[in-house]
Image (cartoon, rainbow, N blue to C red; front, side, top):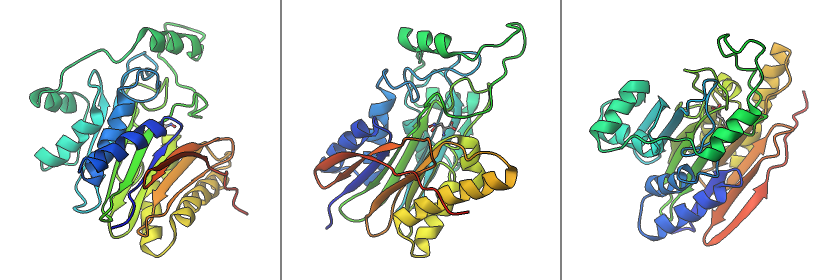
Length: 303
Ligand code: SD4
């Protein structure tokens, strides 16, 4: 038996890591622990980018995306574009547990939630509405269709991705978010996409993403990292590879690399992270009982 390892994105990842660790100590599986950690962040109204209190899209509607993956069985589930349901990560797990499908979206996902005892609730708070209104990109003609500015994640609209390795070496991962603030209605980022926002395989490792989802999808980030670890790369090398790929694809497209960050746990149980410049990525790590907040050093590949 080895020490459990938990890693989660952003400073609020500390709450996720602490909660996941307690869940492991209570005998839960790696996936259940990751879910408990993610749900604690969904429940925190002060986090403006996940669950309750998340900032709305261009119309002000809070629309949530999430996915889960079990490294032992490769069971995975996802939901996207879900309104008025707070615990979308648990809903994604239910898709995996109770249906033959992997991914439910929008009204169908909401219907499935209601059928399974979830209740509808408003996801905005007075504070989140005020922040949405204050930071809202200004449009010249208020009657015009809302236009979202090019995604930059400058709003620090941050996903919580939680990766867990339990003492027996099994892996589980969860990703949950309200996505980029002011996104176009209907827009879905990387977070609920298995292989982009999350991928977990006991035999290869666990990997997750945060940042501008469009660029993360473009490189197939979580699958890229997991496959690199399957070929023997360390978690750090896998995360750096994903950043390098973002740079390479940005160069081909003649744009500046977007703000993105990646986390991973390799099969040896090493946690790591990497990010593009200007991302200022902090993440939380637990090893055994020790929990710390770390700052990722931006990786600037030589091109
Ligand atoms: C998205 N990746 O919807 C999410 C947002 C995020 O840090 O993680 N921002 O594109």
